[in-house]
Image (cartoon, rainbow, N blue to C red; front, side, top):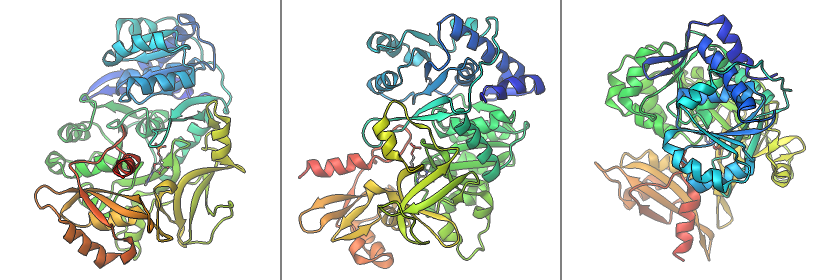
Length: 510
Ligand code: AMP
């Protein structure tokens, strides 16, 4: 199956309905979107001489043309490589080389970089800007029929966001993405043609992937004009577009929940905010639920099992009287219908409920492997299971609680300490705005705990306050040995805190 059938089919069935919008304005109906995808496919094959299976990279800020490009690529039987547009030119170059992309579709902001990349990247033969008159010409040439693809053929090379080392290209097949889309309907919620999806986060990551569940069902895709997350704009778009959902990292949800424009807005059009990708702390989630109502759903996934491992649905969020509501809100929910999830020890044996081990996943959503990286693939996919590198426990009621990435675990005096637990407790203090807890090598203890704290500017917490909060809530051995007050925490381009940088900083001081 080729995923391109979704747009082609909607072009017939929903011809006049909105497919793509820029802000409050319609950019294309389904008939136009389908025509551009089919013509763009012809252009890519004929003008640029690409053959089925060739890779085409997209380095663009969110725009309607992003989706035209993505579906033209699939229509032509090509493989898309959506690259985070905020990466440094050298990082983009690395991904273009690793994927051996032949064509780069990019926007005006990246046009200078694109010319240098054309010279420095051996496989890259062509660059095209979108939007541009050339793009318009390409997407209005004589169309071709959809090029047949098998379900196991690659569709999207997802380069991991790389909080450690070089990014690797998770090879996502047409089957993987079709399964991801079906999983959305089974565990997050149904989607209708009258609904819409807002891309407030980069299409190259989770937002774009979840967008596919909306495109498949004929819902409208809305791209904010600001290109980012602006409270007033999000509020206006919620009021403009019916049945609207969006994906947001926990930090974005927190920011929006505190935005006066959102509190003042009529949220009745708001369908679902899907959050995930990083821990959502209980204090922030509770505030967000107060502002948005029970419209939040959490997902836990990773590029290797695209956004689909477990989900904590809207009904779970709404069920505040449940005796384990608080624990559930700190979990990442229960496995999606289409995946098997286990917690295993170092030998790969399943551990009993409540015990901590590595999260492993099996199912049709799990990637085929890392692009051209057999060793990394063999390491990640063992005995048919994807080893996520995440550490957690499956509770007796079937909810998964994530502790940390295995590499973030702190071992001090032979005791395992999970930074997330300390972060949860300290974020409960009103004087803390953000926090990250890491381990520092310690000659006596192996590692000692250090907390990097961004204090609330209005009512800053002191080290003594935080020490007391720890004493009140967690075992003494878990307490940070040092509190470092900082202006901000280092984050990657998707807003995830880079613990590696904090650890490196501590190492460099030694
Ligand atoms: P990426 O492949 O860049 O999407 O990163 C995936 C990683 O983000 C996972 O392996 C987890 O460590 C983390 N992650 C994803 N979703 C969640 C979540 N809901 N809660 C906590 N961490 C998450």
